[in-house]
Every structure is written in C-alpha cells, then in structure tokens.
Length: 87
Image (tube, rainbow, N blue to C red):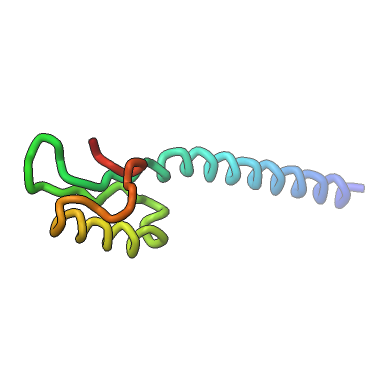
C-alpha cells in the first residue's frame, strides 16, 4: 500500500516539475525573440546596425548579411527590409 502512495507522489512531483519547466521555457521565449535591427542609424550617418536577432540569428545571418553589405555599398538593400529597418 505504501509503495503505491509513494509512486503516486513521485508521479505528481514529476508532473509538477515538467509544468514548471514548460512555464520557464515559455517565459524565456518571450524575452529571447525580439525584433532585429538592421540598417543605417537615423541619428549618425555611416553607422550601421545589424543586431538583435537572438535565437533567429543563425537562420537570418546569411540573407541579412548580404542585404547589409549592399546597403552599405549601394546606399540601399536589394530587398525590402521594412520589418527589420531600425528607423
């Protein structure tokens, strides 16, 4: 009888730990996925930003890097970067 109660208590503790871990992951994901900032600083000509990618940085690095290089050399990117524009 005591073994069954101990097993039920252990299962309840494991479920509570899993719920706590899920809550922590959800809370952390709210802070780690912010908007990226790409483009020329509106206050300082010649100062370019390419930051704030957080967890999506590995996925967006190649494309945003190419667009940033074209922005610096040509004065504007080839693609529309409105979602990432720092202005």
